[in-house]
Length: 503
Image (cartoon, rainbow, N blue to C red; front, side, top):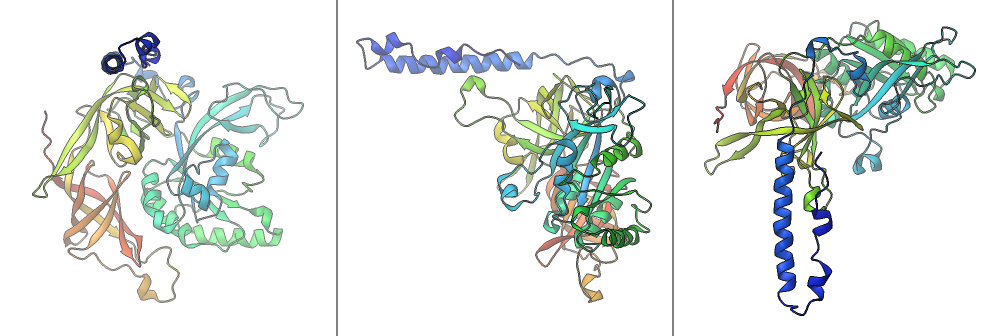
């Protein structure tokens, strides 16, 4: 980062100026001097940041378990899914020590609304006499790589096995779109089912359908809140779970009884994560592509000019490697409408000036976990999640922008998450021409109008253009009784491309 500027000392006129006889013009001179100083400082700082050279990384020898990678950055994304208030955020906190409910309206209502993120390092004691599962431990991501074992009388050293990022998904039905956006960046899932309620609850089945759509193969089922029930009830509930997951993608998945609140059996869960969930094979050599899930302005109100920083985009890198000093592009960028209602897109071009994974500063970022990308973009464009759903990557390598897409789709036979005895109410009706749907592409939720339907193909005009690749998965939701309900999914086959001016 640039060194502190001399403006720190010179943002006020010198005392002697103010105390001098000519009271009328001195402050004015001082003010103009300050503004000139400010302009020069910002210009010199921008010039300094623009000169940051791209970091050189040996991509051939990098892999998801390279010590230099997992020491600072998570390389596996695990989603926590399940019905509202079944303990998803609490489980993440039990493993990582990080509370993912961060926003005021979430804390007041004790629910997750936005996707929450937390990283955890998983260790195993190297002493052969240290018995499992107690030999497995998890800590927050700023823990050193070889801490001493905490089992009394062991005295062994612990080895870092995995660095995992948890994507904490909301359980409310209205927030299903957020959950599907999170599914775009998951490698595995923890399905939470509270033992003190019957199984399945409405969103439990809806979330399970969502991970089937995303073709997630690695699932651990957690029977949470076992501290609230008796042994016989726990056994009956276990039978309900096995019945519920039969024939689904979670069939045969381990079912682990836990109490997230009391941290009971968390060591066994951590062992399962380390041994049962394989490290995904990542492609580091292709062009980087990051899905933006959060974006913000990190500047505090009233900050001095020389302290201002560019906008930050947070997201999950799907492939490739992002490096400090790299030239980047964000698509579709700034979307606007002219007087005639015609849509215009202007991709944003900038440079990476910082990379962060939680509190760890990075020189390069690999796929896995949530990455904060500090840029020179005007913070006005990134504040309040304005870039969510956009795609960030190296200049000239990003997918095209589409205003209309053709989807080959599959509809669910019945609505998920709706408790009703009337079979007609829960049956999913066919797509109709001119119907308005919500289309989830990557991490973007777009409104779209169906213009034609033919067999299993539908053409949809998007309200705002989206950058997507051919074959990319989409989820379709329909508004039913004031809620967006998942009705099907599909893949993008082709589309009407928006021609970007290469100015």
